[in-house]
Every structure is written in C-alpha cells, then in structure tokens.
Image: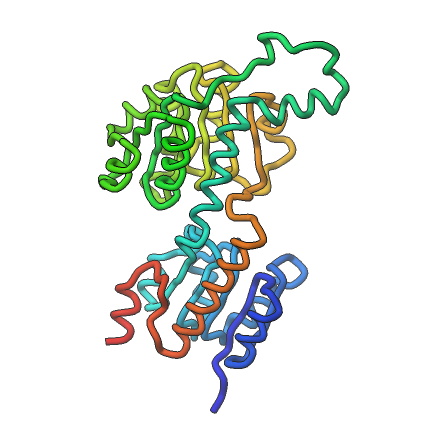
Length: 329
C-alpha cells in the first residue's frame, strides 16, 4: 500500500518530522524561497497533505495540488489561504488556536508598557551615552495603571490581555465585538461598546481581530481621528487591519500619541518605512507567539491535526467544520 504524501514547508523539530515520516512519504522544505520554489510546487502537485506557515496560498497556487486533502497551518491566523477555494474543493484546513493565547497576550501587554513608558526609545537614549542628567518632562511617559483599555475584538487573546489589564493594572476594560463576551464582562468588569465609543474613550486601543474583507483597513484615517490625542494604538493581530498610510499620517500630525506594532501590511517591514524612524513607534518583527515553548506546542498541534486528518479522524482544530463534515458524510 502506497503511503500518502506530505509536503512540509517550515522546519519542524526532528521528533515531529520523524513522526510524519513513520506514517507518510514526506518531502520537507525549510521555508519556500526563490531557490526551492519550483521543487516545492512540484512536490505539492501530488501531495495529500501539507504543513507549514507564512506562505501565501491563493486559488491558483492551490489548484496545483490536485490531490490535496488537508492543510495544517502552524499559526492561529489563516488569512494566507483562500478559504473559499478550499471549501469549494473540500480541502480541510487546521490552525493552532488556544496554544498561543497567553504568549501573544504577553507580547501585546509588552507593547502597551513599552509604548507608554517609552522603553525602547529611552533604552537607546542610555546606550547612546545621552543620559547626562535626570530626564525632564520631554522624555516622560504615561501611566498604564487605572487607564482605559479598549479592544477591537474580544476573543481568546483579548480576554487574556483583559485579565492582565484589569487584575494586574486596575484598568477599565471596554471592547467592541460582534458578539458579547459574558465571561470577560463578569470577570473583568468589561463593558461592550460601539466601535466609535471604544475609539473615543480608550487610552490604549488594542486591535485583536482576524483579517477578513470586513476588517481590512478597519482602522483608517476616520477611525484614528476619533481617538484621543494622548491615545496609543496597539496592533497584535494582522497588519492590514490598520491602514498604515493613515497611521503614519496620524502619528506625524499628532492625531494619536503613539503606536505599538507587532504586525505590518508588508512583512518584513521595509527599512524605508517611515515607521522605522519614529520615536513614538515600538515596532517588533511579528514575535507574538515567538517563544521556544509556544512555537514547539504550535507545531506539535499542527502535526497531530495533520496526522488525524490523513488517517481519517476528525482533526481537533478545523477552521471550518463543515468542510470535514461534507467530505466525510
């Protein structure tokens, strides 16, 4: 009996790769680049499953994978896939929610603290030998404790950040989401508000939404103009939810006070981007889940789901259950 074929397009820990190789015929790539792109597509042509992250799969690309049954992305976000095409083809897609919640929440709160207290800017100030006397008001930051934090999106990560904000820093929590979050309201005294109210009242506006057509450039020039001049924008979800051109203009004009960003419209962030030269911007290289422990757990979760799917068992973390149900009636 021929083994099913799997294409790996992100480096896996040796034990995870060995687990796949025991069951399937595996072709592994350490990422996809100009040097191996043709070989990757050739391998994908007769693959039954694939696993990896950070590669864009539009309909035209997926059409090359004529035998594909399941794709496992080592991420919570799945906007790199044309999910409509996957559903049309009956191809299952899994992701890794939950396992990275606390780690991403740590990163989001690090951005809040670093932006408010100007940590990066002042650390560089010291390293450059410019600390010659006690600093004055020109270098003061702003408090985080007892301020109002507003969330655009209140899912698992939002709830974890809200816990840190309310219980750790006595912050007032408000949020906008299509659906109420009763546990967050009960446990952290959060108040669900209209989109415009969150923008207008929050001292820190945290973007924690999935990237969909309805959320692309949701935070545009008009939204930024509604924010307080003293407010700081935090984006720990997807770069394209924020109109980057509008954000740069707002930061330059003093429409808002600053931004803490882990994600960008173009990644890696071009060195020519004005954001790289702004003192009131903390910019990180998309490190939300980037700890040894969490990345290992994410990869293990994705591998387990891929194995389950290819062996005919329902994976635990399907993006769309209906695709699996329709295929396995």
